[in-house]
Image (cartoon, rainbow, N blue to C red; front, side):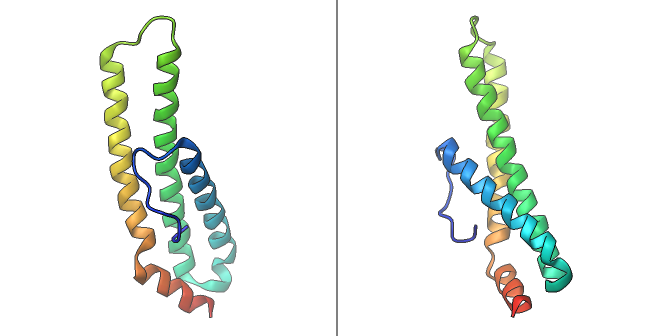
Length: 115
C-alpha cells in the first residue's frame, strides 16, 4: 500500500477499489500478526482500516452520483451538490489517512518490529 501511487479525486473507480482491497488485506495481516509483531502492527491495522473506510465513503458517494444520473427524473440540484460536498470531505479525510500511513516513522517502526 505504501508503494501505491498517489491518488487524486480523478482516479478511476477501479484504481480506488484496488487500493481499498489492498488496505483491507494489509489490515487483516497486521491484525493477525499483532501478537507476534507488537503494538506498531496494531497501529498499522488501525491506519489501514481508516484508509479503507475513507475509500469506501468515496465509493458510496460515487455510486450515488452515478445512480442519480440514471434516474428517469433528474435529481434535485441540491442532492448533487450535497453528494459532491460529501465526496470532497471524504477526499480530505482520505488524504489525511494516506499521509498517516505513508509516514516514514510508521513504516520504520513496523519494519523494526518485523526484524
